[in-house]
Amino acid sequence: MFRGINSVTLDEKGRIALPVRYREDLHYIVVTIDPAERCLLAYPAADWEEIEAKLESLPSFNEAARRIQRLLIGHAAELSLDNSGRVLLPQALREYADLSKSVTLVGQGKKFEIWSAGQWDSRCSDWLAMASDKQDLPVELQTLSL
Image (cartoon, helix red, strand yellow):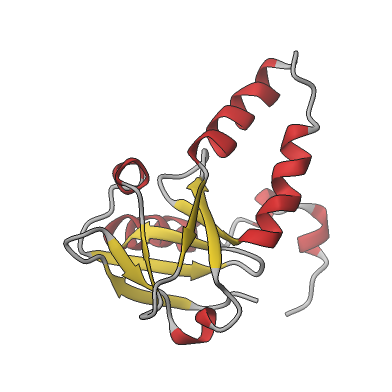
């Protein structure tokens, strides 16, 4: 389970070190783009396989389904952690998410998002400003008690 926000550094080779609490259950992760935001999505390999199977089962003659398949499966990279808990993010993925030295990992339950720290701060500010607009919430969330 991935929770919390972690600041990490992208080294000169394009590697990030995953927080220690994530490392023990991960040997391989699959990283792909988020087509809705300029960030990356990282899944444990076993969880990604389930998602990939669902994506592959979408109808191949549906244009929107093919677009999502091309984007998510096409950009997916299986990465292994080295002995220091680092993963090398492919150049194309780093460019897509505009990653530089300061990177933010955001836990999202079964996955985590990889953001440029500046982009994360900007989007987070936007979302906080919108937080009071309850009309935008799905019905299921409107009845949730925190």
